[in-house]
Amino acid sequence: MEKGNKIKFNEIVNEQGEHLSPVLPEEVKNFLIDIDGTICDDIPNEEPERMVTAKIYPDALEIINKWYAEGHVITFFTSRTEEHREVTEEWLRKHNFKYHGLLMNKPRGGNYHWIDNHIVRATRFKGKFTDLVIKQKAVEVFNH
Image (tube, rainbow, N blue to C red; front, side):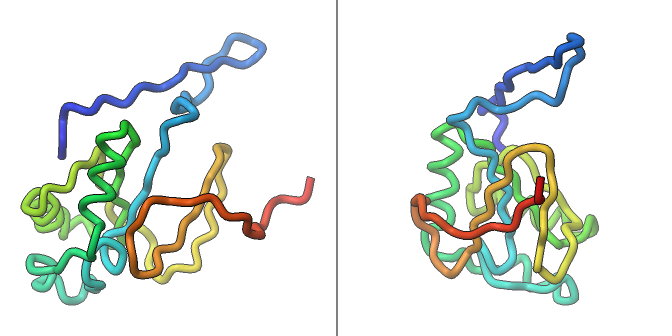
């Protein structure tokens, strides 16, 4: 994990002066990036010996490290279990990925529906890392 890129948050308080969860500056994105099938070969937890030799997907390293250099927060969020942490960190180091955090034990199986009190934007990886572009899409929201 890269140590030099510090995360700066904006402190916020409610009407009573109580602190709320801090937020990132609007220009900073908080990327949660899957590993298997997103930045490298899709390897299930049942075959951990393959994690050591996983091949990087084209442009994944370049784009992610560019986002890191631009000041965005990079956290890898993987379905790999805690027992795979060491091999995962070693693989990320070996390939020079820059990141702030590594979250293990993401639920398996996909079809994620993230509910949060902060803005959540989802981007489905479809085989190629590029810069992100803005497109209008339909999303499910709570009916207020």
